[in-house]
Image (tube, rainbow, N blue to C red; front, side):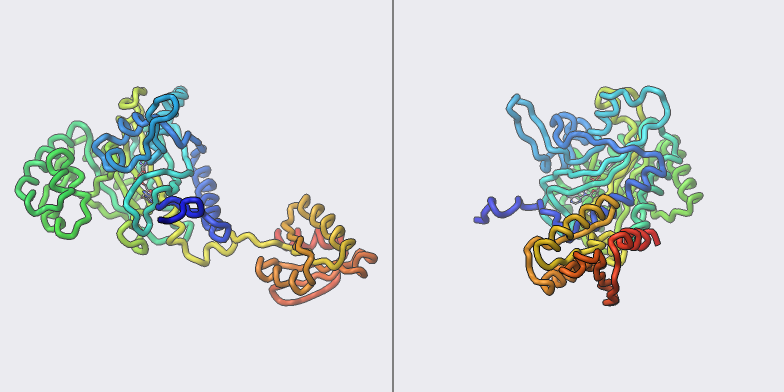
Length: 422
Ligand code: HAM
């Protein structure tokens, strides 16, 4: 048995310093972009009442039925580690009366989610999402703007992706379509996989989402929802598409795109990558106009999406991260105790000026300090020996080209500053 004192739980992992630049870069891009579109950050608790997710996401979904981390706490309350954040955001929107004052409320979040799923490439039990939600408007231009924002983030990272969209109808037109689907499915039940057989009665829409190869020829023959939308839903979908076209955003309509959460109405979309294998969705989202009412709030039509941060990191091109890797601007190498003390003083002063400095505390040779500079990819090494102590003139070496010259303490600060500003 693996030793859980020295191993993390399956499906979880440590994000180590040498890969963290990727995460920070994506988060930074997201914050900057969301700000441009008028979104402000919200941080909701990671733990919520189990009912919130059961009601919000739907008790027939895989997430609620088999993937939640649920337990009874010391107050005898059933609580769950959030499997997604939309339900929590809507709960916070209602609880904090954020709907007061009218207009749309635009919120974003970045953080860990928890689903006890089967392990697979690109699938984790603790994974991270960057999500955005607009509450308080059913305007189809908002749908297009949300999609544009998700795509812009992905493209700004140098990642290539495709947009798949659909309309999943509303409470007026979907039930009739689901009835039709259920009766059609009866013709194929013996040929379907076990999951589909189970779903064909109670949760027929989910059959459309099945990935099992042998089910595909039968699924292809089922009626599609886009042929059964009511006039309002079909008008809304038409307008979403035309706003996407105005923004020159290419899309593919996938009439079988149904999402794994029950709250969706009308617009549903996914952004997929060709570089990910079976778990190819980089982002998923859609409209959830009735969710606020389901949770006891006022009517608040809304749309949102979440990007899988773990998956973005996986497909991030190498060349887009080098600027983000931490590397000291200066490693201060020293020989002897008085030089060490001068190194500490210079490092302290430079850090106050906003520079990043590194000192090797192990007291090793000059050679070993240079070895460390190479390992850390330090941009420069400043050398302090006895002579330098007395004269306050130091040798500085630029590691990229090996050039070495003398510099005073006063010159050093302005040299490093101009380098960063150029
Ligand atoms: P979702 O499709 O369940 O939607 O998840 C969104 C994204 O999170 C997926 O496209 C994927 O990139 C990532 N993701 C999901 N599960 C995992 C996993 N086990 N491991 C790694 N990445 C994963 C939602 O969560 C909705 N709340 C999105 C939304 C927001 N809809 C409206 N507003």
